[in-house]
Amino acid sequence: MNMVKESQLKPKANVSSYIHFLVNYRNKFKEQQPNSYLGFKEFSRKCSEKWKSISKHEKAKYEVLAKLDKARYQEEMMNYAGKRKRRRKRDPQAPRRPPSSFILFCHDHYPQMKKDNPNWSVVQMAKASGKMWSARTDAEKQPYEERAAFLRAKYREELATYRQQHNTRKSLRVSASKQRRGKPASRKANGSNLKK
Image (cartoon, rainbow, N blue to C red):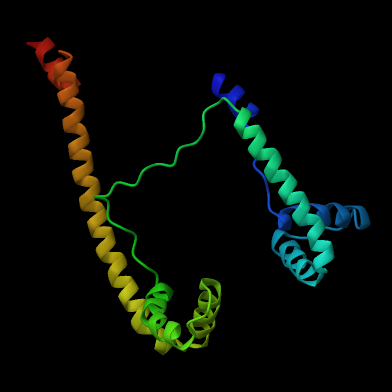
């Protein structure tokens, strides 16, 4: 019950200018066409097209709304006394997820692209990499997909080993903790003692 109260009191997170536009566009669409239904994918596509076509002056309205919403959220969070979500720390011993075939492709081509275009931003590099990847044939993508598949298989093996070791360490800690408190190590041990 206490947790439900806390979650109800937590301030609503702020949203971007695009989300403010999306909500406004949805409300206008419902007013203009109350009986029509658009699927999420279709509606998202229409919103995206409309967002790209509106003027900078009109976008500025939504940017102001986003800034006000961010200020509201920050102020409410300063006064919020409830629990805050903490990001779970990653175990440094856990294996890292393998890169996808596209990421492997990017790693191979990044140095040359950076050399050819030293002033490009990360976004420009990512867009160019995406276009290069899309232009590749399946045969050209094959070596990257094979490397990615190999790395995924290796990751699964490492993850299985890690989980097994982690569970072993965890059970050892639990049994050691119980022994320190004077409790039997397991229920089976306790049950067998009672039968004798």
